Length: 395
Ligand SMILES: *[C@@H]1O[C@H](CO)[C@@H](O)[C@H](O)[C@H]1NC(C)=O
Ligand SMILES: *[C@@H]1O[C@H](CO)[C@@H](O)[C@H](O)[C@H]1NC(C)=O
Ligand SMILES: *[C@@H]1O[C@H](CO)[C@@H](O)[C@H](O)[C@H]1NC(C)=O
Image 1: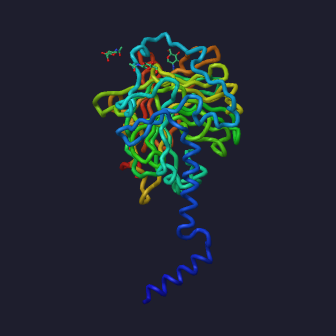
Image 2: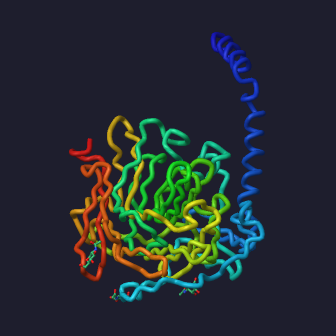
Image 3: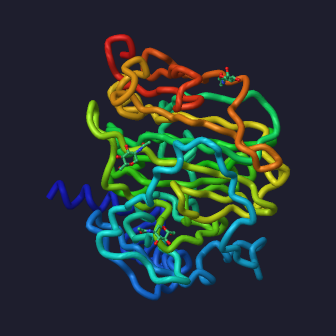
C-alpha cells in the first residue's frame, strides 16, 4: 500500500518536472534520432566484413564515403596518390611490410571501395550526446567528470615551419582502468592559437567509451577550431578522406609488443603534398585531410610533438592505474618501455630532417616519464616513454 502511494507521488512529480522525458515517448524519440544518425553516418556498403573482434567493416564505394558530406568537400576531386612521398636515405624503413588488422582474417575490401568501421547503435548510445557522436571528449563537457585530468609524456620540437613527420613507434595494448579513460600514443601537428588552433593527430589508442572494448586501434583526429565545433575521430564525421581498402582507421591490431618479448613497430608518416595532408602507415597510403578543412594548417604546422597521453579519472580518490605505453617507465629501455624512434620532420621541400631543439612535456614524472635515447645510432632521434600511473610515488 505504502508503495502504491509512493509511486503515484513520484509520477506526479515526474510529470510536473519533465513532462516530455517520460516513458516510451522519450525512448521512441531517442530511438528515431539514433536510427536517423546511423543512416546518415553509415554509407551504403557494397559488402560488409565481420571481424572476430566484433567490428563490422563496411566496404563503401570510395566516392560515397562520409567525408564528402562536408560542405567544403562538395564536388571534391578524390586523390588516389600524392605527387611526392618523402623518401629517407636510411635503410631502417626498408623492412616494413603491410600492417595486419584483425578483420583481414576474413579478407579485404574490393578495389574502388574503402574499408570503414561501421558505427553501431551501441556506439552512439554510449557516447551519451547524440549530436556529439565521435567528437573528442573534452574534460567536463562530455564523458569526463570535473576530477578528470589529461596527462602527458611527450617530446616537442621547437617552433618552426613543419610540413609533416615520420617515425616508428612500437605498439602496445595499454590497460585502461575505467571505460571513461583512454591511453594513446600519437603525433600532433598544430598551428594557430585560441579558437584558431588547428590540429592533425594520428596514432594508436585504447578508448573503451568510443569503441566499446579495450582493443588497440589506429586512430586519426583533426580540429579546425580548438576542439569547439569541429573535431572528431576517424571517419565518424565528414573530413578525413580514406583511400585505402586495406587499412581501417578505427580498426584493431591483433599483434602488439610483449614485455621483454616480441616488439611490433609501425611506421607512421604524415606530410603535406600540395593541398592534402597524407597519412601513410608502413608503406601503405591510408588517406588524407584536405588542407581546406583548416584555417592555419593550410600553410604548414608550427608545432610537432610525439608521445603518450592518458586520462586520469582519479577513481576512489587515487591516481589512475591506466598504463601509458607498455605500463613501464622509460628507464627500463628497449623491449620493456615504449618508444618512438627514427623521428623526422618534413620541411617545405618534402625533405626529411632530424628534429632540432627538442624538449619534453611531462605532467608528473612519478606517474609517467620520458627519456631521450642515444642519438647517433641506427635509431636516429628516439625516446622511451610511459609508466604505470598509480604507484608509491604516484598515489
Ligand atoms: C628484416 O626482416 C627480416 C624478416 O622479418 C628479419 O629477419 C631481418 O632481421 C630484418 N632486418 C632488419 C634490418 O631489421
Ligand atoms: C600491401 O598494400 C598494398 C597497398 O594497399 C597492396 O597493393 C598490396 O597488395 C599489399 N600486399 C600484401 C602482401 O597484402
Ligand atoms: C643528433 O645528433 C646529430 C649529430 O650529432 C645532431 O646534428 C642532431 O641535432 C642531434 N639530434 C637531436 C634531436 O639531438
